[in-house]
Amino acid sequence: MSLFQTLSGVFQPGQKPKPSIFHPVPKRPKFQKPQKPVSISVEEKKRLQEDIIRDAQTKAREIILESRDEALKIRSQAEQEARRLQNELGDKQRQIAEAENQLVKNQASVEAQEKYLKQQQQQTDEQLQKIDEVKKKYAKLIQQTASMSKDEAQQIIFKNLEKRLSVDIVKTIKAAEEKAREEADAKAQEILVDAMKHGATDYVSEYTVSTVKLPSEDSKGRIIGKEGRNIRAFENATGVDLDLDETPGEVRLSSFDSIRREIARVSLSRLVSDGRIQPTRIEEYVAKAKTDIEKIMFEEGKKLCHAVGVYNLPPELIAMLGRFKYRFSYGQNMIAHTLEETKIGIALAQNIGADVDTVRLGCLLHDIGKIVEDEEGSHVELGVNLLKKYNIPQPVIDTVAQHHEDTPFTSAESVLVYVADAISGSRPGARYENYEEYVKRLGKLEEIATSYEGVGEAYAIQAGREIRVILRPDKLGDEAVPKLAFDIKERIRNEMTYPGTVTVTVMREVRATEIAK
Image 1: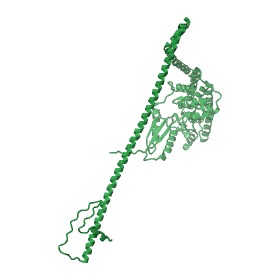
Image 2 (image 1 turned 180 degrees about the vertical axis):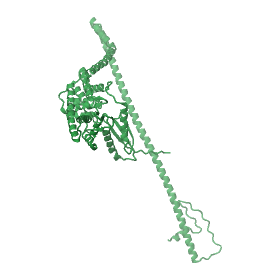
Image 3 (image 1 turned 30 degrees about the vertical axis):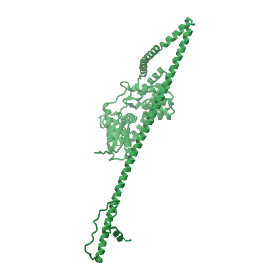
Image 4 (image 1 turned 90 degrees about the vertical axis):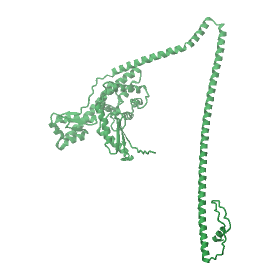
């Protein structure tokens, strides 16, 4: 059947159209027969058929579009209803899970209460049983008393009286303990004062001189030499900077290494006295001064060891202890501090019965890490590693590792080394640091850190023992952080003088902030 025949059948005159499930079919007016027969040509009939076909196609497309829209609407409503049902199902599941959790908690609470009640019941039963036993015991005693002698009755009375007075006896014992504790504090103070008396030394601190007096201003010209060759040779040989313009009649030596500065001072003094200053003689005098200073330090180390009663220490450790002669901590000479601390520690160990030899070596070697220069770390870590290298006994190493409370105390000897160090370092007049120098040092730390491009802020904290550097993330990347930390560390080491160590912490972070309105 052709499309025209199909559509003609659909739109037959006088026939009602079938209703659609998508869109109601509008009622068409009843077909009216023409009053007079009209003759239609073949072309007009053909054109009329084409118009009917086009109208039918248009209607079909409209019906299809309307049906599609209705189908999409039904599908959307179905999906929304499915989502709503799914959400309701999820809510119900969560409510059920919460109810189950609450039920489990309630059940656990009930079980705990039942267990507690059982324990209480058990204790009550035990108490009742004890009461019954006591009743039976006293009933038996009453029965025995009738046939008991006078002495036997007195003994029973005394035993009962002792039980009644047991509370008073406990109070008396506590009072005695408190009194003993008070007397112990007074006794401890007496021991400490006595130890400090034993620790008094006649050692005179020798502060390293950083200037050399000149006989005349002409000596400065000889020190400089032709085109500055003498002063360059001297600075290269000693590693010390010379300043001839600061003060008339003297030369100032500048170096963070006190031993290097002392070698330069001795060498320059001898060269000025000799008068023949030239690169070759500078090298000879510097080499001779190094040898002499090393001998002096070894003798000072041996003298320090003998002063505290140590005679079997390895020569390398004795030489390192001798370097304390030119080392100062907040103005306190390290040899004077070590000698004083060791005498205090020995006196304390003798008073309380601790191992004197362990305390002796612990006090003597507690700061030896401060003169280890070829490694990085705190003086406690460096000292422990050095003593392990020379097979020093472990109890002595423990006292060195714990004398700043970096690790918990493991023995009474460690506590005594810590106490002796605190007494020697914190007594009035032992140490000092000029306030202006302190502020200047902190400012220099921050100045070095902020001098690098890309650094936003820098803060010196922990009394100058740490510098925290905050980078600008838009200027430097993560790969620049380790190199910048290394560069700042090297500048601090080469340009500054500071006690202990300085930790350089470089931080870089990216932050993004948005405000929801």
